[in-house]
Amino acid sequence: MIGTAIAVEARDSEYDRLSELKAFDETKAGVKNLVDGGVTKIPHIFLNNLNSNTITTGRRDQPSLHSGIPIVDLQGIHEDPSLRRKVIEEVRSASEEWGFFQVVNHGIPLSVMEEMVKGVRAFHQLDSEVKKGYYSRNDPTKRFKYYSNFDLYRAPVTNWRDTIAYVVAPNPPHPDEVPQVCSEIIVDYTKKASQLGDTLFELLSESLGLNPNHLKCMRVTEGFLMLGHYYPPCPEPELAIGTSSHADSDFLTILLQDQLGGLQILHDNEWFDVPPVPGALVINLGDLMQLLSNDKFKSVNHRVLAKNVGPRISITCFYRTGYKGGEAADIVYGPIKELLSEDNPPVYRETTINEYLAFYDNKGLDGTSALPHFKL
Image (cartoon, rainbow, N blue to C red; front, side):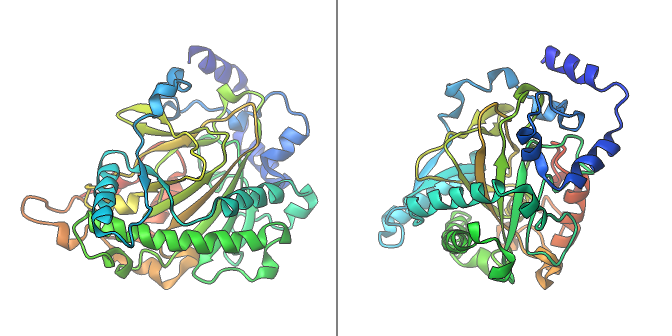
């Protein structure tokens, strides 16, 4: 870590960050363009010197630090009540202890998952001039767009990745707005992921001791966003970060990752690898679920390491109401009333999605949690 700090400090002399950010943004070609151009040293804007991203970095490659992340088998939960009760208990335990778990036998065929990874990769490997037509940072009318770092001008560290974003619900884009190279598989995959999301919200509701439809009746499934991340190989991975340490700003996230690895979660102040399991999907709870559960469930920080191999592909599906300023953005959310008592008073004040996101997005991925801002 000392060597990394010295390298960052040495390269920071006479550095105009805003100018470099604008120059990078104006290329509309992302990180991949740097790699295609043969870059051997990462630009200043990508230098990672955040302590929140470097906790126990010296242990990042130890395989022993991934054995505890739960894997939940969903096979038969709709037919066998006793099996369903077992799975509910596993989901409850994972949500309380880890905030993360992997699911298998989830109903999405492996062939669909593999095609989804191929589709995201295919878009990012299109000619730069073609991709520029989809590049957008602040256009609220675009429901499919391509960019690099949503918080480019706010975050203290620029991440080594490019992204496509597709609003699944409400009001998905017209098929003509999405490039043919990935449009069909995005529709197929997100439809199946949405069905899985319904099941997961039922299990989470039951694991809180509530009716299976309780969370869905709170309209938590009305907003659904898919991001397709592309992490090019990095010439100096020890100085960069693929995705900075952060907790998600949603209720629930469904992640499909390829077999390259690199995802880590923070548990008991240690970074644990989340190893790719063939056919599995990674599930994690976001800040808004921790708020609803009144701290019963965890929303934990996670990050993606930069690597000198790649590209790494991941597809994340986020459940959060109010995408694109819909009416659900004004719904007031707070700790679920049925969970509160004299012995379990509310930890958080009520808030709207608009208010929460304004605070979250303004701070960017800086390694800190947004939740303390909403505590009583």
